[in-house]
Length: 255
Image (cartoon, rainbow, N blue to C red):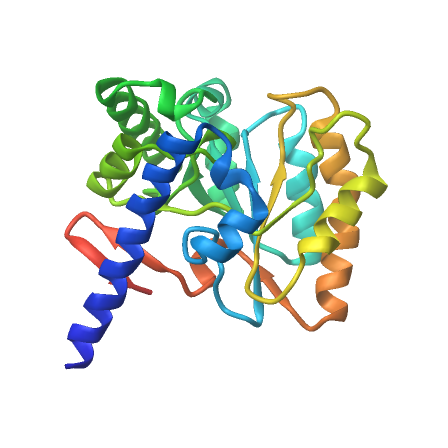
């Protein structure tokens, strides 16, 4: 009976993911990037997990001009995180991708190219996710378990093929908005603390792939975020330690 209840909960979570994808295709790109939508409608998809834990994640790398600085701060603090990699970036810096995992960090898939998935057909979506997943696995020796779509925008084909690849979609509940016009260290810290709470998944960027100075803003704000988590008694770590249900190629499982 307990196993049946767990299966029902996982099925409901997957159904919520499909509903999210349908909402994206109907309401337009960006809906899953809205905080209220994530928090109220799709808590699992938003990465809401262990109330005593904060999942720290970075998107758009690995970038040799900026990622090593993030690794240095995390190493100094003894913190591990999840890096959602772009396949195209990992292909340019294969050694750095491997170094991330060697340092104990977790890797996730952010796609091959940073493009809106709802504008892509099923075949292109499948090729994008498969190519990125296989390359990241080869370079790091670690098969990713998590997937975050570019811009936080999902599509039906993306969810379908993510499941086929054993990738669990995870968005976020707090972000620095370090890419916004006029963003700086203080604005990023303010945005992060506004959404910070136990069980949240935090999004920052370790690359300038979208806008210049994005990674510099995130790096400058990172120590303040870690300090605040410490003061609140919140553990910080990767998504894999956040207590979320994950998918395997054989089907849903719990970690």
